[in-house]
Structure formats: structure tokens, C-alpha cells
Length: 629
Image (cartoon, rainbow, N blue to C red; front, side):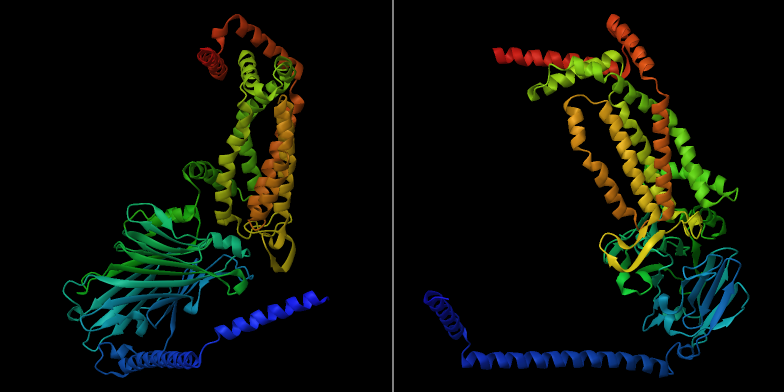
């Protein structure tokens, strides 16, 4: 280090020291800052003490209310919490005497992800429903009251909370033959407690939705707070946002807390009032809580304080089975077309139409034979391929015609090799296509045909509860992913596993794309073929993107796509082997001669192309004439 460097470092140090000394606070500023910190500390301590005091006062008020012998519901403010079990062959429910609330719901006959014979939808404090009645001088919260059970059978129970004035609040539960629970609330002898115009009570319903399936991220996509507008359609809160608070400004027929395959639905006989507040908040996989989302619905519904008319409700607690949900109208006493089947999302209009009027009927028909679900998916694939085969064949023949005409196109357009001649070259090719009666757009049909079907199955398979727990070949459960390798660490975009059916789907997608691109390249001329070579990288990029998307998806969906691509490739290979290029070219030559002799015989796209070519030529001549002037 030379003396110049040493001097430089010394000067820099002096600058820092001088700057620090110049900017240091004065003694007065230090004293003022200390005073400000002291004031902030006192304010913080006062705030904490105030919060503790408020909490203590709140608890004291609760205790005082329970000890206050003048309280209207003093006899029901204390007691011992017990459970009354209602059960049929489909559902088992536990009703708690504390709050007369539904405490536990078990859906029978569906194996849980931890191997138990039944699925517990919620238990204990995971689900709460609190009815709140606003009186003249007090508020009545059912969760604060202890109810006395009576008329207990396997499927019915009556719960009553006694008031000091001789009145009571009565809740009745009746379990139907399947998954429908009927409920009612009635106030007896309490009309003087409420204002004359009081006619609506508040309902606050919350639930921590349990993870029921193996794939947390995949199931979370289908876990939604869904509601149906009165005489309208269904809607749901955004399932991907971190937290959603939404005020629904219309009346509602029902509100559902829905997971991928099971739902709890609150259905009041009278409509839910407008301006309900709905909340959805997701849990994170890494938190390992065992829950998918937290749901909350704050609603208002009809209440008769005179007790002449009970408030009636129903709850559907069961599987998201499309046909079963359709039949719930027959069990409901609400008198409404519930349309609960909308809980099974079948896609956008055209996709929904395919699933509603084709896939569902075929699926029901095939499952009626008791076939394995993997076999059902294969048969559905074959049926779809058979239905679309005529259009696929027509599309392939269009591509084959362009392939056999390629030498003639290259010969007819070889004089247009310069970049500035690209438009003339394209016009010459269109002219030749029209003379041979060939549609250059026909080769796009296979993709246009398959896309609605692929999207339809994308919506149908993950929502088909019939696939849940069903094994096929190496797949233990068609409704979730099938890992060949798993690890504990979550890797970005991949997750914690590799799904074999996803790998098969992506590899088959690459092979099928290579086959179709080769076919397209064989029919392209000049620079088009060169541009096609440049686009080959897309063939490999798309399957990679699909892998990151579908690695967490259900094995049934990936298996369907794999089988579909396999049969598409087989059809393409068969058509290629059975097409005689010489005979096809001879037919095209005959048509060329006919069109040359009588241009009016051209029809369809060929005629339109010829007309467009003629208009383009006339327009070019006009522009050239104007430019010459």
C-alpha cells in the first residue's frame, strides 16, 4: 500500500468522523427524545392495562350474568354439557346440550384419509352455529344457554332452554333417511321480550374445514364457501386469495361450506336476508394444521317472536354426488328448487353442457355395471374418440391433401423466394388450394375438436366422488396423485412428490406433439417449413409446463389425458398407414381439371378463397394505378 492510498483512507475516515460529529443530537434533543420514549412507554403500558381491564370486565360481566338470578334465562345459564346422538345408515350426528348446537358430523361409508371407516366432517369446536336474538333490554345467544333434551329417538330430539318467566326457547332436530337434517327454533311465552316489529334473527356459522384427501394443494382448490342467490345462480368466494370478506347484497337460498367431495349446507325455509357477510381464509400447507380453510357466514333469517310460526331450517351434510344432490329436492320441505347439484362444478356453459348431457349419463351407465373406475375412464375415452372420429378423419385428409400437393406448391411458388414476395406467394398458394378444392384450415380441426372435451374432463374428473378411494393398476386412489417418489421438503413448482401418471401424460404429450408437428411440416412450403423448425422448442416447453401444473392433480385426470393421447396417436398412425398418397393425388388432379374447366363448380371454402384472391388482385391493381398517377 503506497502513501497515496494511506492518505486516501485517512481522509475518508476523517469525513465519516466529522459527519457523525456534526449530526449528533444536542443535549436538549437527547433529553427531549428520552422524554418522548418515556411518554410512549407509559402510553403503551396504559393501553395494555386498559385492554386487560376491558377483558376482565367482559369476563366479570359474563360471570355476573350467570350469577344474576334476575336474568331471564338464569335457569339455563349453567349446566352440564352432554351430547345426544342422531343416526341413520348414512349419517351420524352429535347434538350438544350447550347451545343445542350440532357438534359432530360423521358421514358413514366413506373411508377417511387416515384409514378410518367413516369421514368426520367436523368435531368439537371446529364448527359452530350461534343464533342471536335481539331483545328490548337483552340479547339472547343460544351458545350461552344449556338446553334440556326430550323426545329422544335415533333420529329426533327436542332441546328446550327454560326462562324465568315460564317461557322457553325450543329447538327440534329430525334426521331424514339420507343426509338431510331438519331443524326448527320456536320462542314460547317470550313475545314481551322483543320489540313489536322484531322479525329477524342473526345466525353466525363458522367452520374450520378439515383436510379430507391426501393432496392438500389440490383439495384446497375445490374448498369453497358457496352460496345460491334466491331464484338465481350459485356463486362462491375466491378459493385462491389469502383472505376474502364479501358482503352479498342479494337474498340467498342457502350457504355451503364445501370441500372437494363433502359439504355442509345451511338451508333456511325463509330466504336469507340481503347483506350477508361471508369470510374465507385459507390455511397454509406448511402449518400442518390439518385444515384447509376457515369459513364464516353472518346471516339474518326470519324469526317470529310470538312463537306462532317456528323458524325452520335444513342442513345437508353429505357427499358432493351430482345425482344424489339432485334428489335432495324430494327430501327437502323448503318447497324450493335447491339446485344443490351446482356444488359439483361442471365447467363453463359449453363445457357444462358436454358434462351435463353426455359425460354424466355415460358415467352413470358404465358405473351401473360395477366396472372399475379406471376401465370406465378408458371406455369413456374410446366413446369420445368414436364420436369425434369422422371429424378427425376429415381433418386428417385435409392435411394429407396438402401434403401430397406440396411438390406442386413448391414448383408453382418458386419464383416468390424473396421476402418482399411473401404476400404474392401466399396468394398463389391460396389460388392453387382453391383450384384443387383443398381447405388449408382443415388441419386445425383436431385441436378445436379436442379442446372442449379436454376441458370438460378437466372439470368432471376431479369432482367425481365415485373415483374417491378407487384403485386401478398401480394407482391406489384415482382421486388424488399417485407418487412414485416422495420427500419431506416442499420444492417450488414441484411439491413433495413425483406423480407417475403426470409423467406418463407429459411424455405422451411430447411424442404426440412431435408426430403432429412432423405431419404439419410435411405439408408446408418454403419459409413456412423453416419457421416450423424454429417453433419446435414449443413442443418440449408445453409438456414441461403441464408437468408443473398437473403433478399435484388427480391420477384419474392424468390417466385420462394419457389414454386420450395414446388413442389419438394410434388413430393418427392408422390413418397415415391406410392413406394412399398416389390415389389421393389422382383424385385431386381430377378435381383440378374440373375446376379449371368450370370455375363455378367450386364451392365452400375453395370458392370463397378464389373470390378473396380475385378481390385482392383487383385491389392491388387499383393501388398500383393510383400510385402510378
